[in-house]
Length: 463
Image 1 (tube, rainbow, N blue to C red):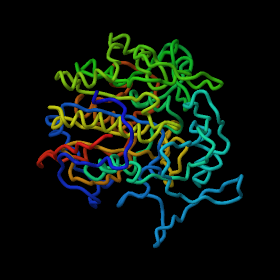
Image 2: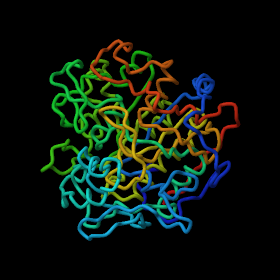
Image 3: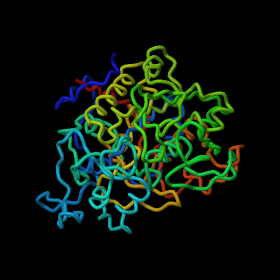
Image 4: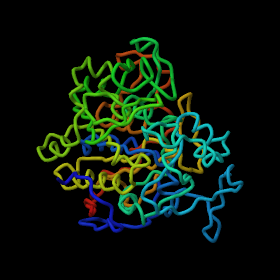
C-alpha cells in the first residue's frame, strides 16, 4: 500500500517534478498587508485545506540551522553562542548536531513549560529533562523523558530530515509558528479544532474556564469526557462545508493526563483519546457527524475516489508520530506518503497543506513565546505551508503565528470570515478570547500569490 510505513534511508530527496529549490531569501514580514486581495482570490482557487499534525518537536530541534531562518544563535565561526545549564554535570550544554533517529525529549506539560521558560531566560531545558520520569508504560505521559540520554539540546539537519527540509526549500517555512498552548499534546489537539482548551464543571459551555493541562468535564481524554464548548466543525456544518478527521492505524495513547498509567491501545476512530477529541465534542454529536472521524485509509480512498472533503485533519498513530521515542524517520516517511498522495492526485492545484507539530516535546528553542492570554502561546514548533500557490519557492514567513492561524485561514476561505466567537457564532460558550481575531498573530494568506503560475508537485522518494 502506498501509505505503508516505510524505513528511512539517508537520501529521500529524489524530485519527480519541481520548480525552484534551495535557500532563497524571500520573506513575509509581520506587517505584510496584502492578505485582503489574496483572500478573495484564494476563496476561488483553494477548495481543500489539509492540516497534518505531527508530535513533539521544537523549531530549533528541526530547523535551527536552516539557512535564512531565525535559528540557533551562532558566532562568526558557526559555534552556538547559547547553552543550558546541566545541574547534574555542573556544565553548560550548547546545541549540537544529533544524528540519532530515536530521541528522548523531556517533560512537556505546563510545569515543564515553566521550567524550560524560566521567567524568559530559556535556560531550563536540560534541567527539565533530567527531572522527567523514565521507563513510562505510556510514552505520551507529559511528565516523562523517553530515554536515558538527555538530548534536548540536540538538533537535526537535512542529513536526518531531508524531506522536511526539501518542503521548506520548495514551499514556505514558518520560523515564528508557536504552539497555541503552553502545555502538552492533549490540550494542543483541543486547540487545533476549537481554538481553546478548558475545564468545565458541567456539560454546559458556559461553565468552562481556561485550563492548560486538561479539558472537558473531567479533564481526562477518553470515554466519558465531554467538551461542551464550540469547535470549528459546528461552523463548517452550518455552512455545509465537508470535513473529516483522519486517524492513522496503529497504537494510540489512551491514558489522558493520568500518569501511573496504562500502555497505548489499538486506535479506533470511535474511541476518544488524547489525539482524537472530536467524538466527544457535544456539537459534533448534535450535528450527527461523529462518523466524520475515520481511519487514514479513507483519506487515500477519498483522494482516489474524488471525495476529499473541503477541510481535513490528519493525526498520526504512535509509531509514525515522531513523539519520542518514535523514530523520526518513520514519521517523515509517513508524512511524505501523505503529501505525495495529494500531489499525485487531481487535488494538487486546489489544495493547501499545513504541516506542523503539536508541541515542543521538551526540546530546546531559543525564542521566548509571546504571552497572548492565560492559555499561551507555547514554544515555537516547525510549520510548513505546501501549496502550488505560495508566493515564492523557499519563502520564509517571519510572522508570529500559532495553530489558531489554521482555524482563521479555514474560516476566511470557507466561512466568509466567520469566527469561533460566542457573540456571533450562534452557540455561546464562556471563552474569554477569540484567537482568530488577535492582532498579535499574522495572516497565513500573506504566504500566497494566486496570480502567479502554480508550482509543480515535489514528489519525494520514500524508502
